[in-house]
Length: 170
Image 1 (cartoon, rainbow, N blue to C red):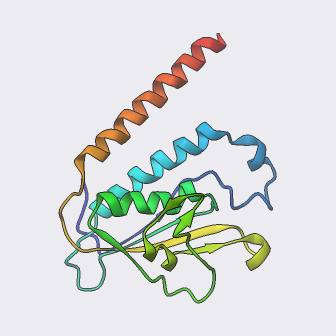
Image 2: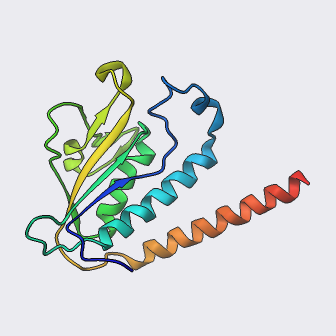
């Protein structure tokens, strides 16, 4: 397990839902399972990135999380998960443009500082859709161990579902 880094950029693997304008195949090539796989991986990658950061760094302690997706499940929900499970807080990105992250979406409330995150949309910003969040680590306490176990269980269940599907296809 590597650690002690000042900063980390997480350009997470994602559904690509922000590049539909450029690549129409994204629309038909992804299903709900693919998206679930993405956000399960994204949560684990973000937690690992946070764990690798030195919170006492005088020049950092920062993690930037970004995706080329506009889906809340891959963005605000992943950042909220990190807030709930690791000693991090959302800080301003310093980016001059972009739409604020959602603090509320379809009945789900997110941390009020989610407004410091930035969303970019093809129809508004003339670029691919994407999301950026900047986090600051403030302690070493691990947060909730139960959560990483939950991720492991979800991964196992996905693998079982996949192998059942494969058997059904035979």
